[in-house]
Image (cartoon, rainbow, N blue to C red; front, side, top):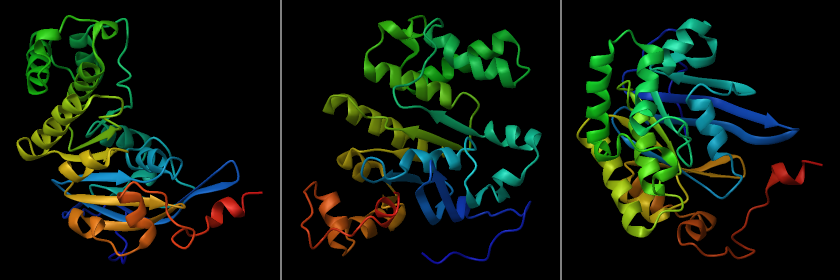
Length: 273
């Protein structure tokens, strides 16, 4: 992909809420990501796809400010994420919501208390207003009736919805969802898909989703990023990615084992030892 001119620190990029330039990561002597150039427009649902171990979660951790890359840059709202002073980085992180795989709810807190936590930690709202915001967020995800439940008593789908409510508690500009439909039955997974589309279409949030569920990805994505061998092998509008002519890309999207001719050698794996 050809990127536009590199933004300067502090410069605003209106059309893209997130952009990476030559982003590379080496972990334990292994190159996980190698020169990633992507741009995620504001107000879209972008899915990140790829085989297990291809670097999807690592990329998401770079994008949301949890892990500096070995080389390259991540721009969020036009600012170089890892060149910001710590206070500014912390402030920018409050504009990004994150729902971890499995939900990662705090087991000793109720659903409502989990959603209230980022409001109590990051705002000066009084308790009455916090309670109102919590109710609004839980209503948005269909979880208000379970506000007083503890995570252990929730189904998998309910835990994921509660985690999304917590992720959007501060009205973030971008929401990152790690495997939101993993381990769910088809009906519950479809409900999560509808919720993601609702967050995007109704509330205008930019949503970045890591998923192995190709049906879900195709249903919700405006844009898709397909990672293989530490590189972006397909990136663009949903139709562009699903219609990509590369044989290995099509083998992945069609859920079939690629032939020997279709497989490309994983240079990073070959040079790991």
